[in-house]
Image (cartoon, rainbow, N blue to C red; front, side, top):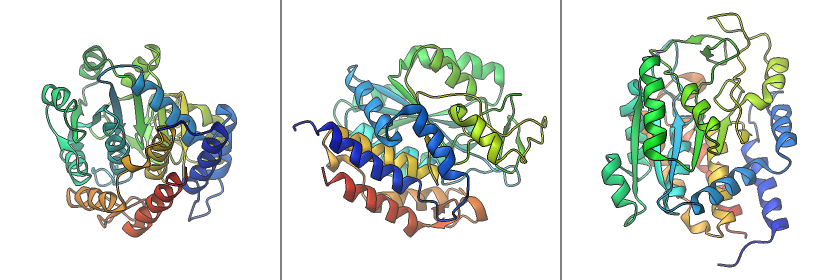
Length: 336
């Protein structure tokens, strides 16, 4: 297919960004944080991420993209649907282009993540099998449970990067450590290693190895949000880490930082941008696929964000809101 004119891609990227930042709670900090990330990057964030991923995938035969996700609750000890479902949506889109998505989450969230992936239509198989199968079918992925022991996590970091040689890494709604090394919920409640294993070490190693990294979040306490740290400290400075009294702002930066109203929405927008850059809107998963992934994730015990029920949805919004966001983005992508 012919390439899309740059001006057209920018126009589509701007609209994708508008959809992903349409905050249905009208929180005062969403747009200023988004604007700070936008100013840093200089063009629509979804488009910047889509172009980065498109280029990375085309740079290598049998490309691997690592996608890190999973945000557990301090009070409940279980993860949420915001993050895993967006990760699956993006992973399935990248698989359609020949990439192998390798999902990484806490060991205690392994089963939850596996069900979200299956609900989203992808097979979850061993790495060896997936490497062979991706050449034949765009329907496979693999899943890595990240260890809670920090020493083991450091060793696994080098092993994983050497083994996979990923062309890109994406973090979606994944806790990121503050300036004093603690991860936390938006309220400031600290997440210990039993709930949130150290994936900052994996991220930092990827950055040091010049692997392109994309961070997607909705508050600034997520991995890869370091570039908007001053805005997080300004707007949410009253929310202090219960572990050390520091800011809740994550310090690790990314090549592209995406701040959206719901992290899943940032992942959906990134996937739509990839499809537009590639001029292949047909690779985007359907709204029904998103619903099935949400249902599977909820049935595995994942909570629906703000209210902590396990009703299918994200950040307290019902399933039809998630589907509507995907519908708008899919429709927009078809306008190319």
